[in-house]
Length: 530
Image (cartoon, rainbow, N blue to C red; front, top):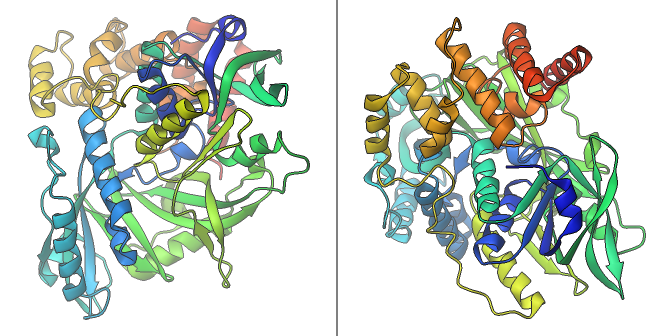
């Protein structure tokens, strides 16, 4: 990927997309797949906002049984299957355990009925999938089995558990990037650190975007027949450019935390403080969430407080008495802002239950959503609307069956075995597996930058990943590499020696001054201060 702002300013596109989170990335890919000329800009780094804040779970929508929303459930099941198909290196089956208590809505009988309905509604969930990606049927387990899989849960009234299967993204940041890269590979122009600062209008219609390079401050225009607003927390701000005095945005502050490991194999759903939390195993740690609170006003003022963290941990500890989690156990805090439908009488935010796709009628289409799983499906609907707005007939969507960058192989297990056996660089099997999980079929191109010399394997491979990220993945800052291109800082703060090593590699690639190196290190370290 090349950040070519001169070309952005010199070209007229069918559509320019504002916002490079998961929704902007999928819209760009969908539109490019259907033959449109596409520009995608992101004020920060791709996937660096709310898209980076998730439980990494690719949901099949079991929760929607509570409201008998079968249509929404079927959509989630379809999209889960799609992601398992098109990104098989990045998305994997995840067993989930929900302990059962008593004989009410949380009891064995109710859960037994729920999983039978779930299995019936998802009858086609494995159609066309690699066997390694098949989602098994759910089943009930005994009290003893539940305690063995989830030691430390509250035993009072426990009478068993329900095990069902969803999917988990090994790396959501690289999944978002895979959509961007695939769009760019088929012709989309993409650029990070380019902020939309206004709309270009003529004759009462939107004709493009006024944009600012956040590194140089230069302002320029990107011309297009239509603009799609996928700016996430800034969606209402962008929409406000067409209206006078828009109200301040009201959003949900969503928080997930990474802690020391609590469970080894299964994600576990636990109830605390009147809310269901999930504790998911992820890269040798536990990923816990989600907590929500109301946020009003400028999205840039989002902050996570000590009170936020203590409240989340207290709720989880009430359901997992043996965990005894404290702030010292928290290695990373994910935060983001999500759309809401309102606030209930208790002051609890009500998350938006459905995506919002709207056409202003003046050349601006807006797309809002809070679900990572269904972003591709929402993008398909948004591009359908885009073609209608352009008064052009649309070719059929093929995004549900087109592999993402790195995902074009038939069998994950076979591919991993072949690469481990081939291994021309003599790397450890766990290193090969980690590279395959992040890059899929692209990983040999990363290893072209390996120079073992005097470096140990871990540093030699890290240097190769960083060089690859700069040369081919538009990494502009140290945070881009530490938080989104590699695994270096995704679960806990890296050591200062590793940060300095990474910064020096980027310095050699990008010509940074020593002062810039220190600023980049400080910026990364600040990310781990709540």
